[in-house]
Length: 186
Image 1: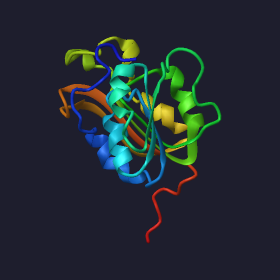
Image 2 (image 1 turned 90 degrees about the vertical axis):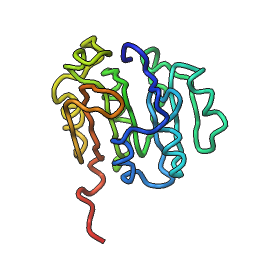
Image 3 (image 1 turned 60 degrees about the vertical axis):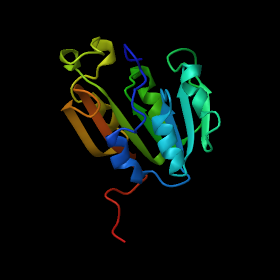
Image 4 (image 1 turned 135 degrees about the horizontal axis):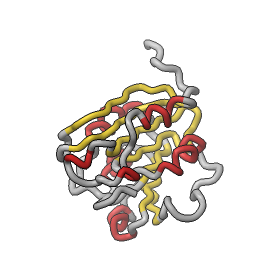
């Protein structure tokens, strides 16, 4: 987990997630990791996705209990067994969360034509605040390495951004190799 607050003050979804959300079809099954108050879960549910929002903080998830299309689950992804053995998701979303041990499990849980939208802090972020512990910061190109073996990278960014506050981040949008990319022209 990232040091400091894992939950963002903003209720608005990440601009990165919004930009690549059209890759996720209506009715898709979406896994929102470290969902917190559910800004991304709400966003995808409003787009008619079936969202599984997970977080270790029951208070953070409480507001999602009555939201149609969201299955909010209190899960500590860093302890115990993977809570989704054998399950597949059409999209996996992770923003401001890093637990490297999950990388192979996420790839295994992604549908062959699924979408990964990942955005989190990277090395160099200490100059701007927390997180500053290297355990919670991606190394240069780490998300590309995560995706390289089984996904097709649609977009990748690495560097300083000012979306919510200045920070050093990496962002990845990738699709499973079961999806033709680029998509065929209609």
